[in-house]
Image 1 (cartoon, one colour):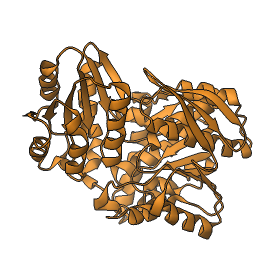
Image 2 (tube, one colour; image 1 turned 90 degrees about the horizontal axis):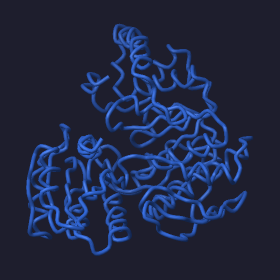
Image 3 (cartoon, rainbow, N blue to C red; image 1 turned 90 degrees about the vertical axis):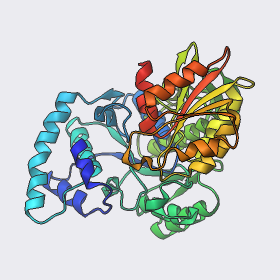
Length: 418
C-alpha cells in the first residue's frame, strides 16, 4: 500500500469505477452515510458511528489518513481490521490492479485501492451501516461512487487550495459534488459556501438540513475533558449530552451527528434518545485535542489548517487559561503556514518548529522566522522526537506542551507517549 503512494494524487472516478466493477460493485450492497467537509468530518464520523453502535447496529467506518497503521482506516464497531485480513485482501486485489494496467488503464492510486478494499471488506463483514469519510474534496474523490442514505458537508474552509481552488466558493463547489439526486444533505456551512450548497441541493432536489437552524445546540458547561450541551433536533430534544472531546468546535460536530442520526431514523433506523446520548458520550477520536500525558501535561491536536488553528487557540483559552504554553509546530508546505503561526505563536512562551515526515514539507524552517515575530524563544529541530524532547526540556511548572500541525507530524509525536 505504501508503495502505491508513487502514483500520487490522480483525481477522477474512472479507475475506481473500473476496479469496483471487477469486484462486482460491493459498494452497491452497503447502506452508506457519506461525510465530507474541511474540518470536523472525522469527529462527526466517530460520533455518528458511536451512536449507531449504541443503537445495536454493526457499524463500519472508513476514515483517513491513519495515524500509526493502515488498519486504523477500517473499523467495525471501533475494532480495526486485523493485519492478516488486510494482507489477504490486498493480495486478492493485486491481480485486478495488474490486469487493469495490462489492459491500458492507469494504475489506481493508493487511496483508490484503499477505498475499494473498504467497500469489499465491509460488504463481506455484512455491516448494517458504513460511515464513509471523504478523502479529499468531494466531486472526484474516489469515495464519490456511492449513493448514500444521507450525506454531510460539515463545513467549508480554506484548505488543500492546490487541488480544490483558491476561494471558498471554488472549494465549496468541489465539496458539493457529493450531493446526489434526492439524497438529504446535512451541513453547518455558512456564507458563500452555503449559497453554493443550497444551489446544488435545489438542482438535485436534495433535502437540505442546516445545523444551527433546523438542529440547534446550546452549551451548558465546559468540563475538564470536554463539554456538556443540549441539542434540539427535528425529531426530539436531547439534554445534558456529554461530548468527551475537548474544544467548542466539537459541539457543532455533535449537533451534525445528531442531525444525521435523525435522518437515518426517518429511513427506518431504530435510534433512541438514550442511544444518541450514550453514543456521543463514548466517542473516541485520537490526536484531536488529546491529552497524552499529565505530568507534564502534553496535548496533541492535528490543527493542520487555519480553521483548525483558530479552534485550537480558542480551546487553549477555554481549558488552560493563564498557563504557559510550549508549542511544537510542524506543517506541510501547501498550508497557510504564516497565518497559522500568527494565530498560535502569540499564545506560546516558546515554540519548537519541526519538519513533518512528508515530501510535502517544503521549506519547513521558514516557520521559525514567522514564529520569531511573536515569541522570543524559537527553536528549530528537524527530527520530530528531538523536537518533542526539546519542548519537554523547556517546560516550567504548570506549563502545557501543545504538539500541533500536520497529522503526519503529530502521529509520530504521539508514538512517544504510547
